[in-house]
Length: 603
Image (cartoon, rainbow, N blue to C red):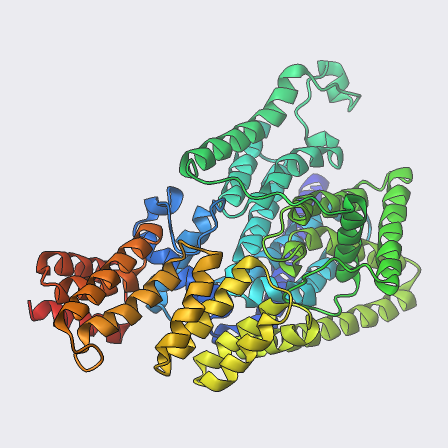
């Protein structure tokens, strides 16, 4: 009877823990969802239209996402993120191209990541008396940390959220002692492989997850003498068990690399730019990232330079010293869960540091902190829980403090989310924080143009031209100035700006297309060009420009429309029909698609 009562009590206790875990998971998940609920109403910003309107038409099937064709407009040559592209296809299918599904899916992913931070945290800290509080507080902080705003409020930054979900799911499976180790290891490796198909930084998890066994050595596959094992005596790790531990992760990494190489066999390696002082650059990057995890201020969507000023250097140095000191303390005290959380920060941050020597436009970005912030939040949760072990009164005071911290974080995050509502808000904020760089100002100019203020846009483009710009940045400014001149019928000015743009990038599809439109206008307007022979020459020149543009960007539907119009004006109806039909297949805005269908109907 006593045995039965004890068993019943154990079952009841397990049920209570299960219900408590479910309630806590729901609470932190709801906190994450409410903090970002307003972002579902945001529009497309920054590169979002490129992803939706240029990338997706080039991958019409799910299989094409794994083997993308070459020359996708504005698609980085070394990008291999097929699951990101597939998630876009799902969002577009749900909303027909509207922005809200693209934002909703990222918010739901953040909710899932927050719940997983709690569930994995419970497993990580369950050996400490305050383990539950540590996991709960870590998840609450993760739900509202302002540094996540870029990753969640900007739908194109979703790969970091996807990788985090995959990595945490891998840990949850890997630490499930009720399953056989071979199954645990294989499923965890499969989750990491899924993360790699979302973004390259998941490679850090290939070492982080199997190395996590140092926290729970009892979960490792050991072979021991039967009597020693029954007595709970020491065991030893054999070569066979080591192979079972490592092999699935090696297979996942090799499979990903083979798939990546096969898909990107035409890709050119990215240019490497070694900083003039690499040590200063790396220390500055590490310090900035750690400082932003501790105090996420000021936040900036475009961090053009690694901070090197006296104040920034001192703050970065203090952040690094604090991190190293805490790491050393955890090592000396054999605080394995805390040590794992700190190592998670370091290892998952490492891939982002490679951007320092291969900067796409900027060496640092807030979205790179989403995955490392998991370890940071676990660390803070563990330290807070330890601080509350001095009695009931101290726990109450600490809980009130944690609630205040979470409320403050939620308020700051909601405020920061508003910046990502539209391009005018985003680039107004960014240009004010990066006054020396042309990218934010030229992006604000483009947003101003989208709102119909051509004069204001031209003024901003000319101001941006005086600031620091990359070659690509100068090209974009000249190209936009050419289009503004063309729209006000200043063909001389338009051609001058377009030629300046082509001098920077002779194969630029957008500029060739714009020149083609201007030339086609001359060839199809008798009032502008009375001479019939001159009109034919202009139309042939326009066709040649469209063909040049199409060679660089074969998946751009607008270029196909332009080429179809030029071919039709020259009497080449089969070619015109072929390009009009291809443009419709690739996808056009509704008014343009209707006009193209009318042209096809006339044939």
